[in-house]
Image (tube, rainbow, N blue to C red; front, side, top):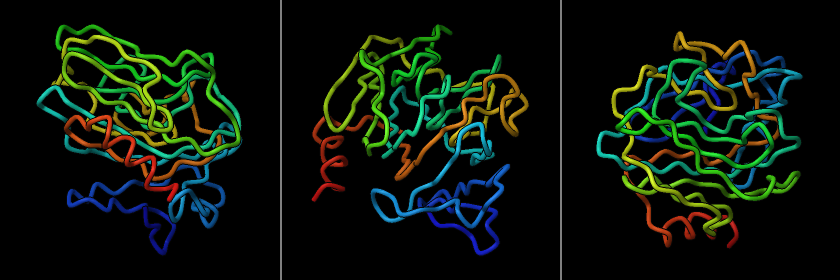
Length: 216
């Protein structure tokens, strides 16, 4: 992640250049802070209601998807957002964050238009860096924490005809594909680092390598 000189955008380092726009940030100079690897996003939940907004990004079309990130939570807001292509009533492909009870959770819209949750069994820890990821393999989703499998479940693919183009980092986006959701936006309270989306399924070894990379 690289902050622009005017404090308005965070650059996408991939070849797609889907830069994120900084929104509702009172102290843009403090958006980036030392993270797990280089800089991390520093977000303050409902106090500042800051988030990053990506207008569009390439959606997976082949029933496989991986999302990973280094995160640290100061608290567990209801439906706290890591990264989501999901609104209130309009849906996209995935929803990744904490659920209403503070458990790590990934939700998907399947090919048969069923919403499926894969959820951890324990509350997410506070005030420590954690590597989290989900891998959607087409017929199964695997949820990881610190390189270890913590939950898995069966799914029927991932729908490639979502109603939303945009992506919210640190908050849930609105049904109008812009800004935050007005009700229970799920602002992240803590740090987000190394957020990555892969339009294919990483192996368990590759997920473990992403975790180990920051600990060597």
